[in-house]
Image (tube, rainbow, N blue to C red; front, side, top):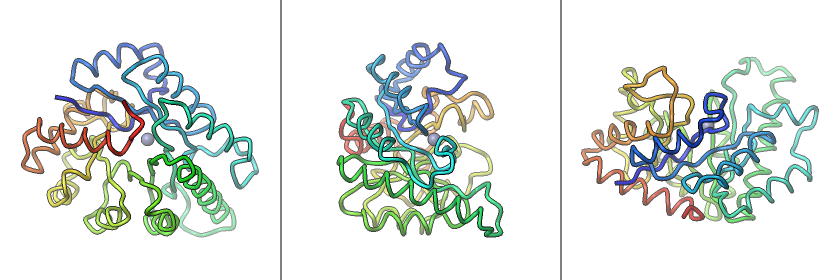
Amino acid sequence: MEWIDTHAHLYAKDFEGRISEVVRKAREASVSRIITIGVNGQTNPRCIGYAEEHEEIFAAVGWQPTDLDELGEEMELSAEQIATLRGQASHPKAVAIGEIGLDYFRLPRTETPEVLRIKERQKRVFVQQLELAAELGLPCAIHQRGDGTFEDCLELFKPFAGRLRAVFHCFVSDLQAAQAFFELGCLISVTGIVTFKKAEELRETIRSLPPEKIMVETDAPYLAPEPYFRKLCEPAHVVYTGRRIAGILGLEPEEFAEISSRTAREFFWKMK
Ligand SMILES: [Zn+2]
């Protein structure tokens, strides 16, 4: 049996000096692959570094919408930053552009000039990276959180549908949203949230989704599934999330492990 953690942040402080142990624990839990996701200019090269050091680890590189401080006053990634990202994404073990997307979660609701500026910058950086992913033929991992981001993400992604595939990570939306993603040729991935007591609605949605469009992830170090709720989340824990989804879909854990791993290997086509 094989599980794949398609989204983890191994550069997190909690994992410092422990990467080998984290990988070993994952292996012992039959998690054979971990995709570690960068979020900015600092973390992207570190993700590539972990991928170089460990056979089990692959990397995704990108600028996350809430991690744009390095841009200073600039509204876009510079030509140099794009060139760096292109170089990193061309690494044999870089399997995706991500995470990228839109996040209005912590923004005030009133659209002051400053709020509009932040949203505009997120959108521009998102589109720049969609363009790069399309150019390189790589899939991307999309982060989308906060009111209005679903609509804005779809609008910006639509022109790329057909030449670019994306996974909407940490899926917590409804059936309609899932169908909108699928219609664009995209997939979803689900975190430990699906095991949380209060996530009954999410479980109800997943019940009617096609198993071959769902990948599993930890988003480690965050969102540890039951029975590790509120503890440090590690890639090994993706098994609990996968087992729970299998149960929801009426499948044996082995069946869903096989389906979701096959989906992940096809989607992240550079992953060996
Ligand atoms: Zn993430």
